[in-house]
Length: 150
Image 1: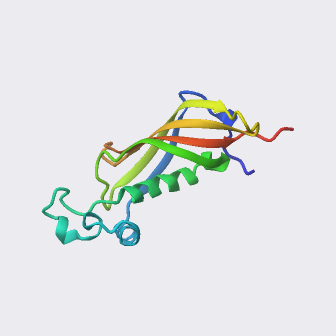
Image 2: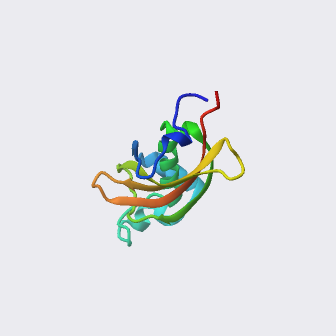
């Protein structure tokens, strides 16, 4: 496996910065048209005077952005698989032009009971916009490889 983060690199309290992503309007619209075509995600005219005051990103798009940031981080190299997401909250709307920054804190880790080559890591994740407002908060539960013996 290429250089990256392994189970042994984690400790409770470890903070991780996953970088930032600029939300492109056309990308956001294209995603929504294919995967989540609710009017709040695809019809600008329907929403300019509505509850959200304009187009907002789909929650699934926001999750895709967070996954892209994780995948390009050294943590991504050690991931064997996702186990789940707990306490997922979309706390503020995401809009075209927002710059989203993802960070996480390791809140729990344990070696796998059944497989010696891996462990389970829980991370409290937050995605913030350029105004430092939390737009996404959740617990990420991930299976992480241990370093190869020898």
